[in-house]
Image 1 (tube, rainbow, N blue to C red):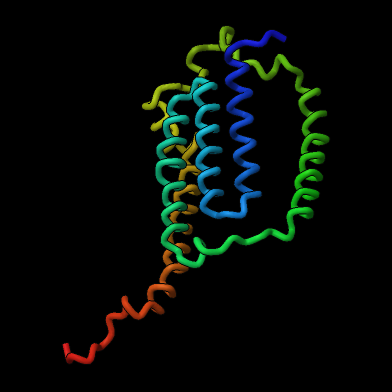
Image 2 (cartoon, rainbow, N blue to C red; image 1 turned 180 degrees about the vertical axis):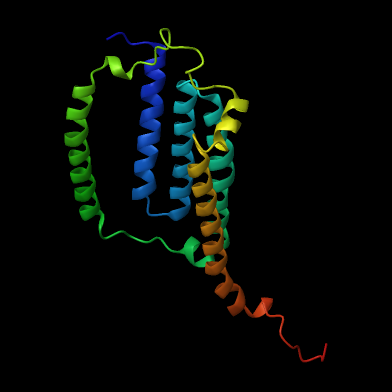
Length: 193
């Protein structure tokens, strides 16, 4: 196997993604775990760029790193109880055992399937295909596929419902904290106003 610059970049990005993902689940400080999550998501964006999917890399950086991870960091910083505690996970041995067993099961299930399919079936050679059968690669084609019932309309709608449920859940989780805070109460004040 020839070692190319592309394979070196792939190995570096994979190590970055997996290493920072491991640090996310093993870090005792929640703020540091959020920073490691951002690093892991950045590694995934690099892998998307390496796969010549610049739109997915852009979305990964803007949506996951630029919005969701920053929102998590703000939530951690604005929650006083979370920033003070350094919780120790007492179940890490069981978690490692479950992860190793899950990995072994996945490898034992997927290895025979990959051998049955063969390496040639995984290539993306469209030279013998009709050009009209090849999926579109432009952003306009992607936009049309997102709302086409034959392509991605159902997953797109499910994702929007999932995001709405997360938004409602976040609002419900925050509302008791706001109601219990004496500074934010808007009830009758003693001045008669």
